[in-house]
Amino acid sequence: MGWLVKLFRNYVFRRAIRAFITILIVVTITFFIVRLMPGNPIEIYIGQLMSQYGMTFQEAKNAAAALFSLDLDAPLFSQYLDYMKNLFRGDLGRSFVSQGVEVVDLIASYLPWTLFSVGISILLSFSIGIALGIVIAYKRGGLLDQIISGISTVLTSIPNYLLGIILLILLGVQLQLIPVSMMRGTVSPGMKPGFTWKFISDVFKHAALPILTYVLSTVGGWILSMRGSTLNTLGEDFVTVAKARGLPERRITFTYVGRNAILPLFTSLTMQIGFMMGGSALVEFIFVYKGVGWALWSSIGQRDYPVMQGVFLIITIAVIVANFMADLLYGKLDPRIKAGGSE
Amino acid sequence: MKKLKNFLWSLFVQPVILIAQNKTGLVGFIVLLIIIFMSFVGPYIIPLDTKVKLDKIYQPPSWEHILGTDSEGKDVFSQIVHGGKAVLTVAFLAALFSTLIAVTLGITSGFVGGRADTVIMFITEVVLTIPQFPLLAVLAAFIRLSSPTLLAFILGAVSWPALTRAIRAQALSLRERDFIEAAKILDLGSFHIIFSEILPNMMSYITISFVMAMTGAIYSQVGLILLGLVPLSGHNWGLMIQLAWTRGAIFFKDSLSYILSPILAIVLFQWSSVSFTRSLEGIFNPRLRVRR
Image (cartoon, rainbow over all chains, first blue to last red; front, side, top):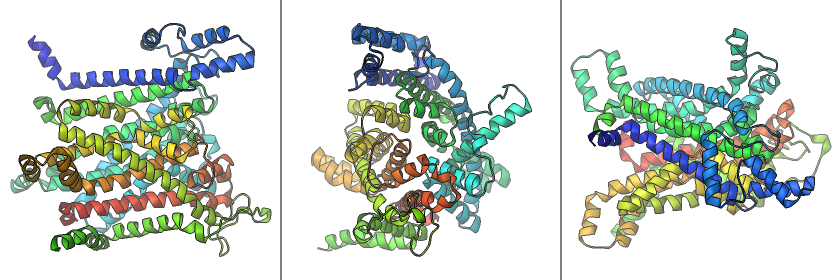
C-alpha cells in the first residue's frame, strides 16, 4: 500500500488526474448541451431533413443518428455511454456541410496550425516579456522604464482581434507594406509540404500576422508582471545576502533574482494559454488563418453542429493539456512543490 | 461625528488626492469620465446623423465632420457618441453579474470552508479551464442573444471563476486576522461578520475587479458581435466595426477614420480602465506606493 499512497501524493500524478477529470466533465457538458438544449442540433437536423428532402421522421432520425454516431432511440444515459465510447475511439461523427467527412479528419487538418501559431507566440512573448521586464525593473523610474511600461499598458488594453484589424489596416492597406490577400490561409495553394526552405518560409509568411498579433497583445502583460515580480524579489533577504557575499552582479540577476521572479508568472501562464487558444477564434477569423479557431467560427456560421462540437472539445482539451504541461514545468522550476506536496 | 468625518475623508477625498498624484492614473480617470459622459449624456446633445449623403462618402476628418463620414456619407462622430451606451451598459451588467456570483461563492468558500469550499473550488477550477470565448461562441449558437440583458447575463455567467478564486484567497487571509477572530469570540454571528467586517475590507479589491471584469466583458461582447453571433440592432461600437468589416470598408484607403474611430473608442475605454485600476491599486495598497 505504501507505493499507492506515494503515488497519490505525487504532484505529476495528481495533476494528471485533475486534467483527466476536467476533460471528462467538459465532454459531459458538451454532450448535454448538444442533446438537451432547446433547439438542439439533432432536432434541428431532423427538421431540416424532413423539410428539405421530404424524408419521413423515422428516415430523418436514422440519418441524424448516423451523422452523430448515436442511437437516438436508446435511453439518454446509454446514449451518453456510447458517445463516450466513440470519443475514446476518436469518432466524433461526421460533418453536416461537407457530407461524409469525418470530424476527426477535419480537426486533424486544422489543429496543427493553431498549435503552431499559438505555441510560437507564447514562447516568443513570454521570453521577450521576461527579458524586458527584468531590464526595466533594474532601471525603474528611468526614461526607458517609463516608455516601455507605457507602451505595455497600451498594448495590454487593446483586444487582440482589434489589434489584428489595426495591423491589417496600417501595414496592409494604408502603407501597403505587406500583401494581405496573399498571406491568407495557412499555406499558399499548391505548396508541397516537406522540409524544404520554400515550404517552411511559406508557412511562416502566412502565420506572421497572427503571430505578430498574439505576441504584441500579450507581451505587455508579461513585461509588466515580470517588472513587478522582479521588484518584489529584489527586496528579498536572500538577494541582500547574495550582494553582501560579493557575488557577481550577473549571477545575482540570473540565478537569484530572475529565477525566483519568474515563478509567480507561471500561474498566469496557464490562464494565458487558455485565453490565447480561445482568442484564436477571433484572430484566425480576422486573418482567415485556417486553424481550429477559424473552424469554430465557420462551423457555427454554417450551423455544422458535429464539427462545432468537435472543435470546441479539441480547443478545450488542448488548453487542459497545455495547462498540465505548464504545471509540470512549474513543478520542475520550483523545488518546493515536488518536495512538500502542497500546492 | 469625528468617525464619520474620517470615514468620508478616506472614502472620497483621499482617493482623489492620491489619484491626482499618479499622472497616468489621473489621465485614465478623466478619460473614463469623458467616455461615460459622452455615451450617456452625449446622445441628448448631439443628434444622430441619419441622412444619406452619397456625395460625401468616406470623407476624411474635417471641421464639419471631425471623424469623417461613413460609407453612406453619415457623420461618424455622432455614431460614436450614440454607440457607447449599449456597449457600456452590457459590460456594466455583465461585470455586475459576474462580481455578484464571484463574491457570493468566494466568500462562502473562503469563510465557511469545509465541504462547501471543496465543492465550490472544484467547480471553479473546471469552469476556469474551459476557454471562455469559444464557450460563449458555442452558447451563442444555441441561445438567441438578442436582448442586451441576456447577453450580459451569459457574459457574466462564464466569467466569474477567476474572480471567485481571488476573492476566496482574500477571504481566507482575512479570516485569520485579529479583528475577525475578535468578532467571532464576541459571537457577532456570520451575517454580521461577513457584511460588516469582511465585505467592507474587500471593497477596494472588489472595485478593481469590477472594472477589470468590465474590460473583459467588452472584449467578449465586441468579439461576439464581430463574428456576427449577436443579432443586435441599433447603435453600437461593436456593430460599427462589424459593419465596416463585412462591407469590406477596411480595404478602402479613404475609410481609415471610419473604421478606426470605433476601434479607438473601445481601446481608449480599455486603456483608461486599466490605468485607472492600476492607480486604484496604488491607493488601496500602500506598499506599492513606496516602491515607485
